[in-house]
Image 1: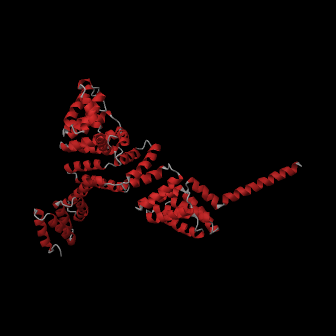
Image 2: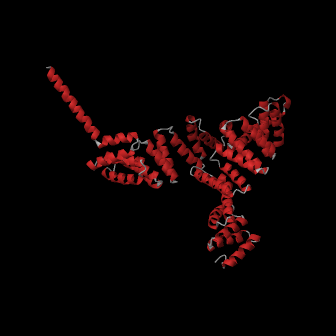
Image 3: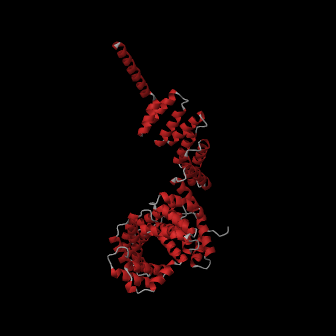
Length: 499
């Protein structure tokens, strides 16, 4: 009896050993394990072996395509997925993965098509709807993007990616009323996101919902003093709701000597919002004299000095704020404002240093790079000037994918113009022409800019392009000295306008 039991156990162990060995030798098992560990090369090899053994293994094609995408072998992935799709044309995974591959190649219209097919076969996969929305947005197919994000919200009404995706598109299209409930939901789960809060504030402001806007705008200003656009909106909202007037009236009826520092600051800010700058400075001075160690005074005091064009006093206040406040928002704003004031004082080296400091805190701020470029220009550091202006242009181009960037028009126009002028001085005429022509739409009636553009093209031996700008100059500024010179250049080139 004992011998029989031992034999049975031995047989079971032998079966289990062979079974385990068989699974270890299965390329599908090997491939899945490698894929889970992030060993994409090993996974690719195993899944190819599985396909060699069974050319109709649909799962192997799906997993091979997945591994190839993760290994950045996107072209190979597309070929494999197309081949696998022919085996099972109703398999949503192939279309979703093809969408991933095309999105990775930045072929967004093709990605949109694949994701849409995937959703037709599997309408419950929220991740595909999110990818469809993002690809459609990048392909500038905004109705398709919104439809995709809306489907995702039907599956998960609080999905933050879908809420942000739809909200940003509606903001871009200036459909602020539609954006409001989306950002309200998003803000309820992302209260720490300054970007979400800013979008909610802007949506409230643009829909003239000042009562809801004011507390949100004040919260943003308290968190980040560099949000100058929100601060301007706050000033207008206070004016629209009559609160600055009420604040000013309240404090004007009291003896100023009896006011606490906090009351003085509220009074000063109300006066500043109403453009009573001289009076605001008097009240800020009283508050500062009461307690010069308070760190919440210098920034507002400094910006008021700026409004009064008292730049030296403003710089002193901003440097005081930098010393006492470690928050990145205030350090950024204080350094940038100090740089602007120092530019007015013609202290260009110090302006440059403050501008560079501001960029350390906000490396994506367009205005910081503009100030830095202007400082370099005054210091005749042309290479650094060009580099700063080019960075400015890159930042605006990157931001344009997510919204309206017309507020940067002056800065972008200046950047194209100044880079073009520098190249023109350096006799790099082709480069100069390329940048100057991009500056013209921002300053279409700038006679000198039209002249420089024509000269750059003329010196690049592109006569027809030179003629275009010379003729535009003559049409725009017919009685100017530049028009006379343009005509002389046309005569030299043997060209006539209108021919």
